[in-house]
Length: 290
Image (cartoon, rainbow, N blue to C red; front, side):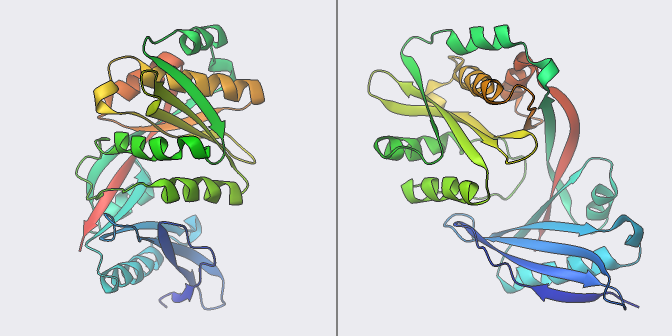
């Protein structure tokens, strides 16, 4: 008997997206799996949807995932989306599932972890305190200070040429409202956002940033490190990320930090290696063209 698919309601839409959700259940109402479809709503990404699908291991290979996928894809088409992206760890059942159902591989990500025992604090401190002529660092926790909001929002274009493979990712348009809303969303779920920014000392503008999220429980997660193209080549990415690591270690020496990087992003992979991050696994970003 095919699973029953029930539409659910997501009570908490994000500032730049909303989610559709479904629950798959068996004849006795036992949950078998779920699917979430994130619909991007901001200019530059309204063509895109992101799928997160999960089926209980004991219920796989019985059509549950296929039924959830069909429901989500139909919804994406009804919302006039032209692409659905989904991610799976390399070599897992999810990887095989997506590849067998018309999704194509568009990007590979390298996940890495910096454990407490892997941190060379003296080396990190030397990097964090080594001066970069013409630049200085500033930092904040939570929402960006008002006097830095405009220049920080402008610096987000440093992510525009981030390696995305063949992903039809669109263009993320950042403004002050979006920057502040993103930080507020992180705070609402009980996490803390810490940001290090590189500043051009000649005019006070932010030219790069590194964001680190401290979860209420568990490991810390780097959200992004980027430098404006015209300011690259000065070691600013390494500098900022080292400062973030040192800050995290001072807050909680026992906490590990996680990061993920496109496998084609050689400069950031070198930064992670220099700082002591050790790869844990690889994931595949898939895309279904509608």
